[in-house]
Image 1: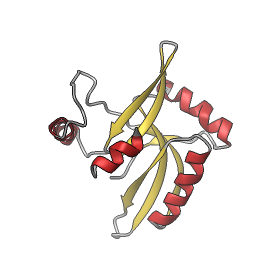
Image 2: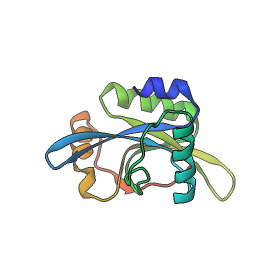
Image 3: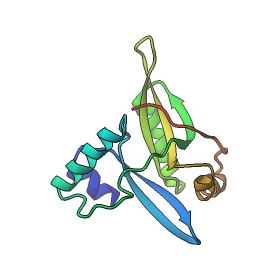
Image 4: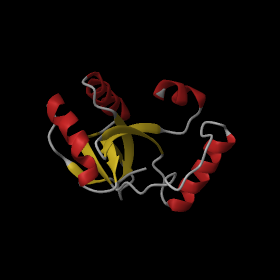
Length: 141
């Protein structure tokens, strides 16, 4: 599914597995975006392109936490680490971080969570794959 979505457009997507009330769900997240207004515009774009076909109160969700898997000087290094993680069953995504001096680093994240409790399932996936518990506040664009 992720490959079909990526092929259809240029909007970045990632998968965020989450365990809710004893059941496993996979959130398909678009973005990241800067704020809720941008998120609503992105949702409207997805609807207009027929990538998203229904709306609900859960369409825009603030997910400030993610697991940090590393910072990289170039996108190629981040992509290589991303491929390695995905081969181990860890869904990841790369976010560009621009520093005050104008330089860019690339941060590799796993998951997107509203709070620490949401992250427990991904924490188990990371542990099984040999990654540290590195839940942080997500930054970048």
